[in-house]
Length: 360
Image (tube, rainbow, N blue to C red; front, side, top):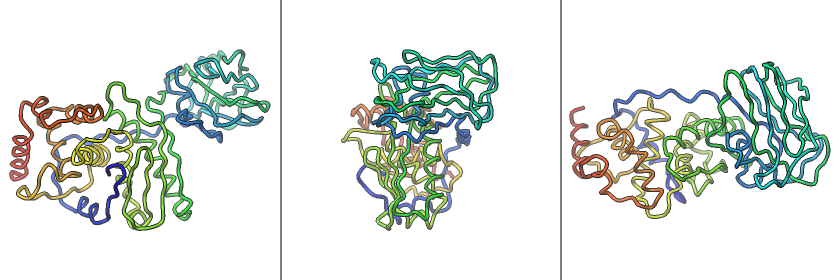
């Protein structure tokens, strides 16, 4: 829901009522499980999250919040072993500071037993692996250091190629008020991390870098379902204990994190885009509202606006959501954009959409 506001139980109950109008769009396949995960007990400094060390961009980097100690590790773990020709690890920040030489680079064929293959020299560690099976690459500190650990990039030349993190993200989870929900909260965190790249790709725009850190907090109470302020998502246990299957509500909030619109964007469109991503990208199989064409307006927001957007994608402009998102992000949204994108004004499009509902 829109930043700083809360979604009530009654509103969501209305949105997910049975029966449906749905655009005839193919059901997208859910994203595959991430081919790589990163494991480290080191806290990240700011938005220099662990995934930045494997994003294909040497100008970004992971940085620990504090100095490293002997035994600290940073592990890149593949879900399936790959045949690796070469590994290279660039240490330090892009300005040449926080170089790290008091450690080793190790690889593992099974993710359990590690073997040293290189030591960093002047911030670079590299090794020829000659096609050996690799399931994990680990940087391990061998001595306490005064500097923080910074890893600009891990490069693994392997077959099959290992995709990098195009949109690095770290979800920091807080379930201290609801410890009994730990397992559910952990699954939800993984769900957000898995779908975040999909959301970011759907809502990509030139010059925009999505937030790299989300704070996801689960609180005790029934003040609502969930709300988002900036990159902070807060959800309440009453709803999710009663509806543990409703991961879509959290996906809706993650969309708001990616949107990052300035003030001034119309709330009906902000929420409509969020529900379009939720119901037509994340969970297109979920039953949606049955609309009465005589009692709805495009400004009704949520699923009503989401349904209009899905219909426009199907019938007029496959990129219209991406275009509207970019305009909102630039602070340049106006209703006239619908005519610019489709050749028809918003009111005309709305009447055509309502007539399509009558036909169904």
